[in-house]
Length: 262
Image 1: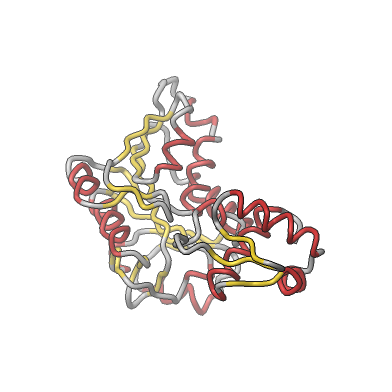
Image 2: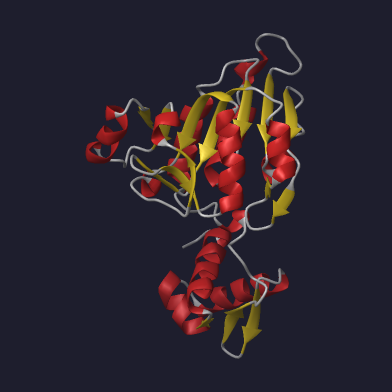
């Protein structure tokens, strides 16, 4: 496992699951040297994510869900392909909603890279409405993108703004389409999220959109999480990756969801 962020993500997941781990066990688990693990532990301790112990590390008592930046390496190639396919659905001048998450962050990056969105000569060729602070931060420097941030209370674990302040603003807007990242998606339970606050703001985004697009890699399909975002009947398009088998895709198409496998 070569990339530092990928190792940090894996180490934090191990620590979140086990509470503590020693250098030798971590090196064996990740197939790297003990010297590399020690350097990784030092860096994570510097960021106050862990506490070093004699011969290992423990997760900090203040730790919560892994911050978004440490999740980006999971299913990264699939998410990039999904993002490219999803961004291709957007036309110049559109008003687009994006919730928080690693896949929707990739969608935002793919949208920002589309030079053809400037083809109509408008300075603001795209409007993005988001409750994700990291997405707003990345897109605000793009002169052709108008950014609208919902407001609300920030969740450090996901950089998403949630609560009544966020949903109240959305009630005054209309969106051409919304791209929703999910923790689970199946035909019975629809699109779901682990956190009920995030599910609520995501639901509000879908209710204001003419077209609802769920972006989810194959690992999220046939799974369900705690809180429902919307029913499968409310989803117009599902963009997933090529690893999703026909047996998983057919139930979605049978209920009228257009499925794109990237």
